[in-house]
Image (cartoon, rainbow, N blue to C red; front, side):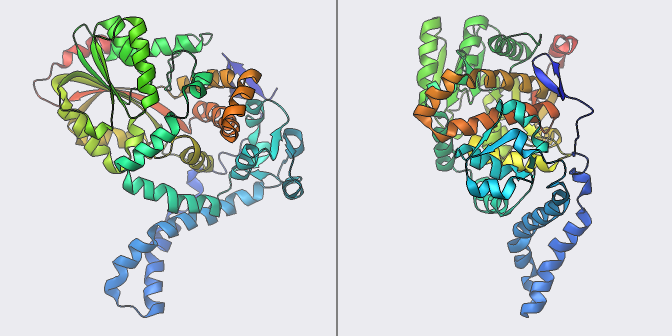
Amino acid sequence: MAHAQNGDVKTIDRNLPDFSDQLAWKRVSYGALLTIILGVPGVVIGVLGLPWWMYPLCFIALLLPLFGSFLVVYNRLCVWELGTEGSRVAQYLTFHDEALAKTYSNRKIPMHVLYEAYGDGKIDFNMDPLQAMEHRKEFATFELSMYHLKFFLFNFMPELLSHSKTQDCEQVRDHYDRGNDFYEAFLGPLMIYTSGIVLDPSETLEELQRNKLGIVCDKVQMKAGDRHLDIGCGWGTLVNYAAEHCGSNSTGVTISSNQIEWANRVAQLKGVNSRVNFLCLDYRDIPYTKYDKITCLEMAEHVGIRHFQAFLRQVSDLLEDDGIFFLQIAGLRRAWQWEDFIWGIFMAKYIFPGADASCPLGWLTTQLEQAGFEVQATEKVGVHYSHTIHRWYQNWIQPANQKRMFDKYGRIVRIWNIFLSWSTIIARQGNSTCTQIVCHKNLNNYNRSRFFKLKNK
């Protein structure tokens, strides 16, 4: 085997060819990028005979197209040499489309062409999708193209600049109101769509998630009577857990009606419905009430960069001066590779549209501090996410699940095969990670000694 086992998630064999150094961020000439971005508007002004006071307008108009075009061209120069090098397409892929077979029978296939064609049923893997994706560099390239540039300019950027309530509502409801049976097929009975925590690699998915629920409650020091708000509560599992195990009075907020229905049903079954409250509304419309503990697990990415500071200030307004804010958030690394771009576009298109605030840790801590928070503790849990997603994949890929889901949902099921297999690897190798952040208001009289226990753990 080209990969060794570590628990149930594979780790890369050092003998396997790895082109990451060839494709890394350090190969991009930032000097050339700066020259093009600053120089081209001047050339346009000169050629068209426009007055120089129009330079700022020309600069703004050309900034994103030039940036995107530069990355596409530079990427092609970097990956072109890898197009035929070590190609083993026939070993991993079967083509059901004559044109694709003719084009890529002897050269590697661009990753975006692969996942679109796989979704359409024009390509199949010759083995388990995850097993094949572990060797993706032997049959695929991370090639940027007009496909990515168009999505970046006409989908990603408008969404980043907008993030209106209407847009966010449409995106989230289209995603999370797809059907609870769709999500239960891989999330299992606990219905938690965030990273679990591994204490033992042999643990089940449910054990990983219960570990996480207990750790979150411990990190915010949840206790009986606490007024607790969970922003982006999903199917309400943390809210119901905190009420049941800690005696808190917990409120969950989501804009998915399917999730609210599920959460209320579980609360009734657990007998905690008198201590929980689920609100179906946009986070911007949360009624003003003070809370002792506020949690937000992997929802803040969807707030977007543009509104992130306003979101944190809203959290601060809702939090008691002696309260604790817990943020679990997925993010990308600063030292990127070309695969990060390809995977990011795939995720933005099919899995988490509008989640543009998936940023490096440094950006997050700066945002928190600017909003008046003091970061008390951070913990990277990206490798835990890899184990979690791998368990989701194991649930999802079961033949009975695949047939039942495909009969009802069609193409998106095959896209989910790519999502879960690829993301297992992405989280393991660090392209994307997840961070737990414990913070509080940065006040002189805040009782910081309350965290002695947290730090000892």
